[in-house]
Image (tube, rainbow, N blue to C red; front, side):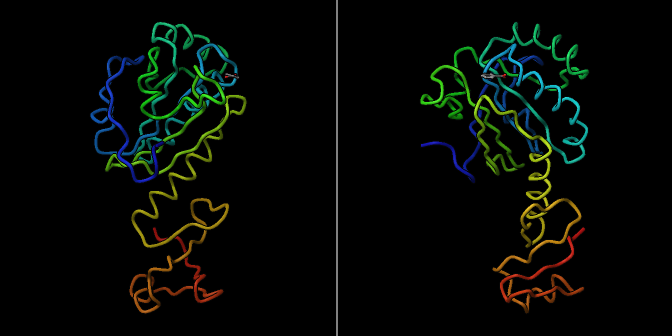
Length: 210
Ligand code: BEZ
């Protein structure tokens, strides 16, 4: 069965562009994003890696480490890194795991044989400080991911882990949020003393807690 939300992200040891990594130790006590690439020296992946390198400060602000994976060996990743810097104007500034034996790809079900039996799809795993999987996204090889969306979901995950709220459709950091149904109106008065707008008894809108 494939990995599901709430499962512990499998630990692994693998070679990367920043040396050998024991995944759980590398994550440490914070958040992490693990994302896969079908293959080195491919155009869409090249743009994605440049974008993640550019966005790294945004991930760091949120206490999130990023790590990529491609099924080619690290020696290829190192050569590819030069192309990424040259064409995207951003140097690889996070580890890229080499997975020529598909060990990590198999562990994380990143190979979907009916799509392609040797290359990974574009998987994204967001992992929390408890090492549990908080988000999975799967894109086909032909579609580059939207890493602003990954940051947006991380904002929601971090907010909703701290407060008893949920975020509505298309929510962005700073927008109003929703009081979760599990909180009674009586409890909500204590948790949200500034009050809320009840559009329906089950749809209670409140300012984003800070
Ligand atoms: C790409 O990254 O451009 C790519 C990789 C595999 C299949 C299609 C596109």
